[in-house]
Image 1 (cartoon, rainbow, N blue to C red):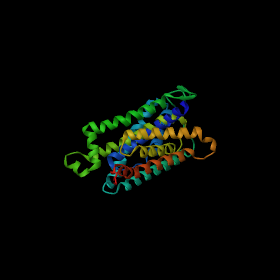
Image 2: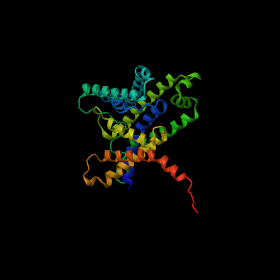
Image 3: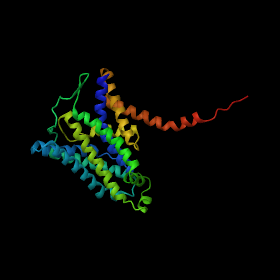
Image 4: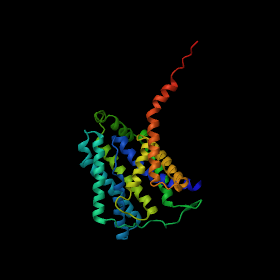
Amino acid sequence: MLQVLAIGLISAGIYALFAVGIVLVYRGTKVLTFAGGEVGTAALYVAAFLVTDHGMPWVVGALAAVLIAAAAGLAFEAGLVRWSREADPVVTSILTVALSATIFATEFNLHGNNPTTLETPVRIGSGLDVDGVIVSPIQIAAIVVAALLGFGLQSFLRRTDFGLAILAAADDAPATLLVGVRVSRIRLVLWASSFGLAAVAALLVEPTVGFITPGYASTLYLGGLAAAVIGGLDSLPGAVVGATVLGLAQAFADKYFKGLGLSGLSYVVTLTLLLVVLLVRSYAPEIRKRLAAPVEVTA
């Protein structure tokens, strides 16, 4: 059982980091972004170029990767998102799909399918032994960082002027402008933060896999998307909770149902969870209404 918990929490930490970035943008703009996976992969290539190819310290490469990812978020918002501001949020979501495809094509043209390595700051195989599962310091860091971001950013949004401005801009941008809040600056910060978080997530998961290829982080990013939906797209703590539920469910299924020979078991679990959550949310108001209805007593 401890093995399942350890493996599930490792996956949860990865999913949660991506999910927090997704929810952060959605809360502030009502746009669902699909670009985080490839942004994270591109950030890893930047880190590998500096660390593996040019011998710089891992910290330098990681910092450069996060800053470049954040700069890409600024450029994307200023160059494309800003001009589609009056359009339906679905249009902007499609732009993120196009950005992801463009980054993937660029990575493939530059590197092909050849795996690229990134020197890690810790020795592979070292860490905490949990019932035979080695949980590395990087994996522990991913879990801790995800929890701190999810609950810390929620507090930031509710208790600071800038956080309240983000929420107000999402609900009513014209009214927010009238009170002197620069909505354009808020959206720049949101996109930069989301892309930066994608880079952080990719950097924290890379030591577990050990190599980088085009599309490397996109599969994990799909898990982040699912976690964000499960936890509620408007809730940053919910993103962490959704990631935990998804990670543990996948680990449980892999432990106890792998012998059935089902291919793509993790995808089956993810889809099942999504369907259950969406069905519950769809029928919950009606169920509550019926439960709250007064019972007629006949003589």
